[in-house]
Length: 251
Image (cartoon, rainbow, N blue to C red; front, side, top):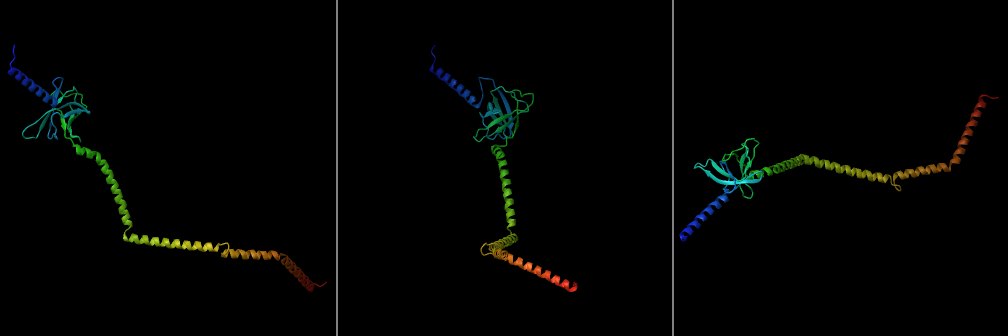
């Protein structure tokens, strides 16, 4: 049986269209060879989310965004997610759109703690994302608060220094420094005077000690004379006493 060229061209065209359709859906995250189910979420702002963006749970990708549709009013956007892994999603789970610094936008599903799970083709609760910049600011804010406290402390110190250095305080400080300089000068003068007084060669104390040494030396040299003088005075006093007694009581 001979196949015409038209039939061959038609068959190849049909196969190419089928492959194109399958490839397009595969890129969008739709699986045709494994088990999958759909999960829906409703948002008012998808923040640039597009088909084929990942859908992770606890950091592991379990599916991808299949389609995004909305009505003419643009008040509600329906996101269809195709989950390629069989996972149990509690009914109180939340789907949050999360941008990243690399520009990859995903829908992170935060699992709840309920004991019942969402059925296939059901809708999961959503929550507005704070945005990547707000999230970064959330990490930066503690540092900024600490810097603010530090700047406040520095400002307080500067204000205290400024209050100390106001005109009246400056005058008081100058007077105090002048008094301190005067006191220091007096101490230096007193120290010099004391040094002069205590000088072993020319000091007044040295002269007094020399005079005292000379005096005690003379006393030592004239010790015999002094003793004789005392003895003579004692004899004279004795003789005078005897004369006085003989005068009043003659025998």
